[in-house]
Image (cartoon, rainbow, N blue to C red; front, side, top):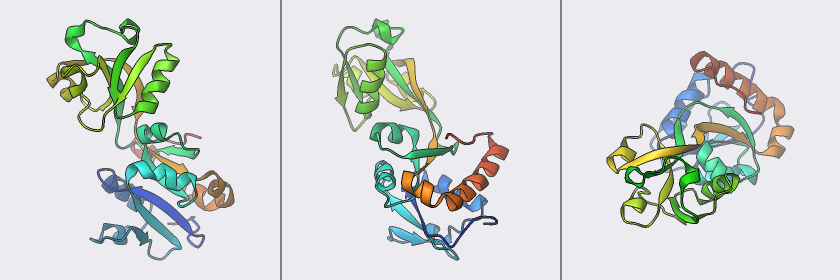
Amino acid sequence: MASVDRETPLTIAVPKGRLQSSVIDLFEQVGIDCSELKSPSRRLIVPVPGTAWRFLLSKPTDVPTYVEYGAADLGVVGKDTLLESGKDVAELIDLGFGRCRLIVAVPESSGVKNVQELDFNSRVATKFPQIARDYFNRQGIQAEVVELNGSVELGPIVGLSDAIVDITETGTTLLENGLIPIAEVAEISSRLIANRVSYKVKHGTIYGLVKLLRNVLSKKTGVGMEG
């Protein structure tokens, strides 16, 4: 990791699950030794060899919490999880992977073409209640948000809801269940976030890593700093 301070302690929260391999791949491209992270183990705190750094393996939805409260200096999290959490963290980089869209969808048979056509106090099923409420409030639409943790597409099929707010990559699942998107709530991808105090106190170390990541990402997709 040329030009990066490896002596300052740094804790990076890494989401367990589908994003973990993409995180490892990206970090290895900037010279971070992820061999310990890739080894089969039940350890949740994993050292980065040759540095004072460590990884903290976490459930994706917990990453913003660890970062906000300073248990981790940095973390990788999906934009959907970040928006839903409402945590006060610094969003540094769009990492570019895990891309999808957060959309509003309705049964094609409903004839509804945009959110303004939804009936007053329509019921909306979602795994993202906070995002959904914020979105419909911004649109000036009164909607009853129903939180589901399973297959949200079931909501309209069984008459539980008039619409859904959910993530889609290809739209195939929507079509197979007779649903069509009528609005885009947000574009989703993985982001690097920082604890606000750590970003000031350890700015040199964090910015050195950010600079390396930006160089790799710019060669791939042109994504870069968010703020």
